[in-house]
Amino acid sequence: MKLLTILSSVYFFILPVLAYDNLFIFGDSLSDVGNAANIQDLNHEGRWSNGLVWCEYLAEKLGVDAAFSSKNYASGEGFSAGNINFAYGGAMTSFGTTSITGILSIDEQIYGEKNILGHIIAQDKGFMRYGANFGSNDIVAMWAGANNLFFAGTILILEDFEGTARRAANDMLANISNIISSGAKNILLLNLPDIGLTPCYVNDPVGKANASLFSSVFNATLQGGLADIESFHPDVNLINIDMFAMFNEILANPSLYGFSHTSVALLDVYNNSNMPSQEEASKYLFYDDVHPTTAGHSMLANLIYAQIPEPADYALIFSLPTLFFALFLRKRKRD
Image (cartoon, rainbow, N blue to C red):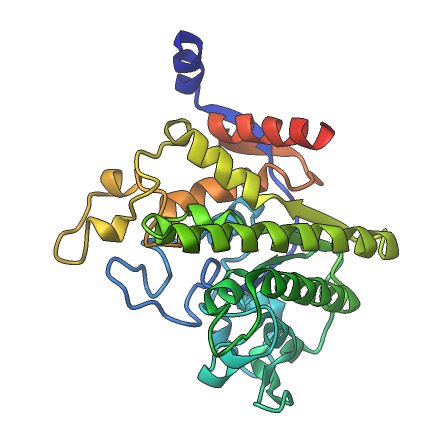
């Protein structure tokens, strides 16, 4: 205990600054910076959190332009405008029911909005609006799948949780192949955490079991398909981030990462009439029943950054928990 206390007080380490040109984001509310605005209390400018989200923190660490909402697009605009976050809150992994309400699924975020027949009707809302391929030094991040769970078992998706999970994972594998065909060489892929461990399912044992099953099947299916993609595309740098292990580690050792509350969400205690201090808010891992607080997003960005290959000189400061977790993951992969 004394050794842990000593180590925890040594907070700063030097890790590399990475030299990438652009960071493109495809995903759902976990990555959305304004395409589908959140109206819950304590939201930060419509984000599904009380502050910046992980990809914004990551962009800063990578030294690339801030990932603005893709809705800001103007005709003829190029990559340099920085409008590179295509994530929509509520997005599913492929074209389907969400497009009816104007929420672009991941494949629509790539190719453009589709109508109910699956025909593209607004290409200027997807990456293809640029009329160009990804650059060889761009990072393309993809994180989605949870919304397929939230719709599973309803009239919208008439499949069981395992079937829905496999379909969602196969959608993501197809999306990865699509961005590779558009020139992506550095793909940052995040799998799903154990959604059953979020505050959403604290008092719902059946829902918890189904959510955990969905997460496990999704991740296993995704991992199995990635081997084929890597064998067909050896020139692609596939940066596979294990969010399942990452969240489990944080939940198992919350105090090491600065969190005191992991089963109760910030919105369960505070609202716009009862505002938390920044210090108090930072102790909560979850903003609402499924989304991290900005403190959670910041920690995730640190941990993700530690696993991105280093093409540049060493110059970035990181926290001790980040270093511990990076070493933990490396050991886990070797084992």
